[in-house]
Length: 389
Image 1 (cartoon, rainbow, N blue to C red):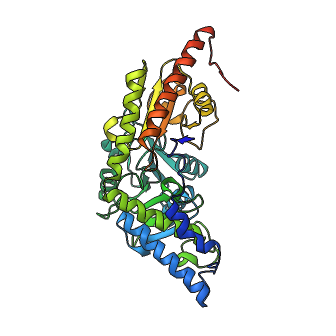
Image 2: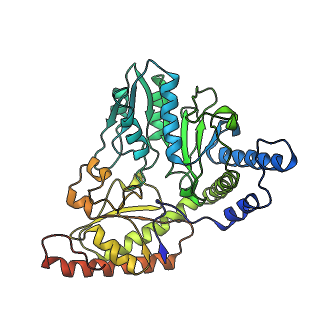
Image 3: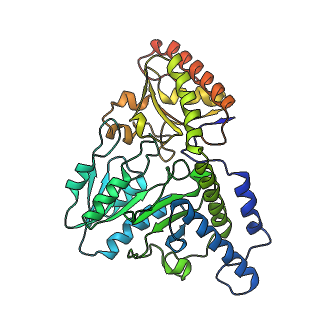
């Protein structure tokens, strides 16, 4: 099997699995207890908190552990609104993750949402953001990098605009963290969401950065865990794993890990563009994650391509893992102004540091052969062809 769907999830790093293993066994203590078994768990949680903080340039006390990126996103929005009862306006983009878009819509009609449009390059215009902020704006939330296209938004510029306007700023950095340097240095970012399974930690653990001094209302209430900011007994094994994954990600990036990802992606793209006619890149090449290629291939339905490549042991996707399986064209591609046909012929290829050059070469050959087979069959039908069951 060759796995090139690392924006959906990643393989747990062996060092991460080793770090969490003791807390699945003999070190099973509840970190809220006072005896040595519990204190050791508390120390492990504190150590992980420092590791997460180090990766993004934060203070340990500014990190709240959550179950996932979705919870972190929801908590950021809910908290900003709870802290400002008189403000009921949210500014975001049309290409945000559903954890932002759908949660905001669920709060209607109590909340008015402005979704900033994006052109074909996939990036929000900072001037449009500035113009959208109103006196009743409670929060600006803009994702660091899109989970489908890999396009990175002008987050630092947007955060500065929000700060100048006196508005809280949140960024969903779930698909950026671990792939590119992500930092809250500068003080303009008030809240930031992370999810461990996107950079080689297990599923079921995330974090929310809360800048010191930012008012916060917990999304979950109950016990006093996480300094009263997130109730529920801490998932110590997962938290330890997230901390170790952050430590490894920081070390990779300090040693040119993002450049190595780009080399693998560019090798794959280069072979595909050389061999396949009618292939197009979606979004601005210069503003994307180094691990992500989002491509459209003329006359090749993505669903058919995924079936053929899957039969050969290649794991790729047609978009967000949260929407895969749906027949509708990608919401993100439509927001960028693309046609249904182009959206339905789009695939996402996302590499990780665990991929090899040999895998990239084999993957390219599999995709090229599958495209040729689909195109040889498509003239026989007016609609998508399912070439295998």
